Image 1 (cartoon, rainbow, N blue to C red):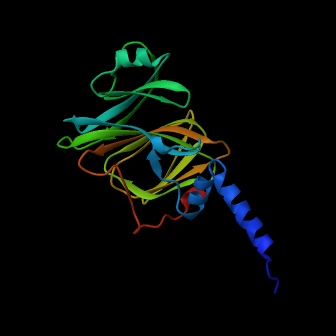
Image 2: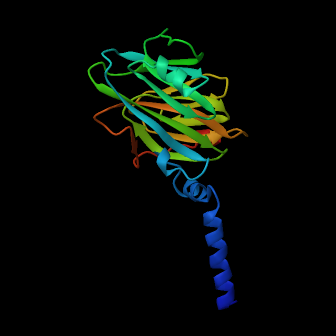
Image 3: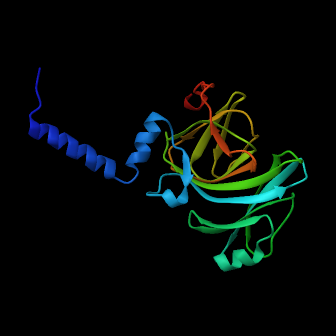
Length: 226
């Protein structure tokens, strides 16, 4: 059996330290072991990952469904002037966005309409909050199995994402159909295709409950790998 000399052990340790210091290395290790979890944008250390960019309390919506409206503006000041009571201005993926939770057909003043996503099923008697995230995944990166206390939707700017639930799978692509999944069932997300996935994500969650909860009593069938 070959025995490593102290110098060899030291060189290996240094190599591992250098690898860990590379941008995104901690995300790669996390991806291999458990999947990438969404974290506050204040913890961001690199491009890759899932970053929570806004969490806005909306109150009771008093309807059984609503819609997510995405509008782009040339400047943040322009977007803020158009913001309604259920709108949030964020700067993400090279664009200034006004993200709003409103009825079908609603439009703000000015800006460029990018998308209207819905209907999003909700409980008319509950108060809701809108958690917005920016997700950048390379093909093969995953999120751990989890559930949400309200509907989730994505607007995909590039790449492709596959979502598996007990009911099957949905695939969201840039320029394709929007992905909407109701709150409650467990799910497992995988970035598929050949391009880096870049997406804005909404979790319209019940304010009294965590937006996301990890689950350990459900195992995906691997539908997104087939």
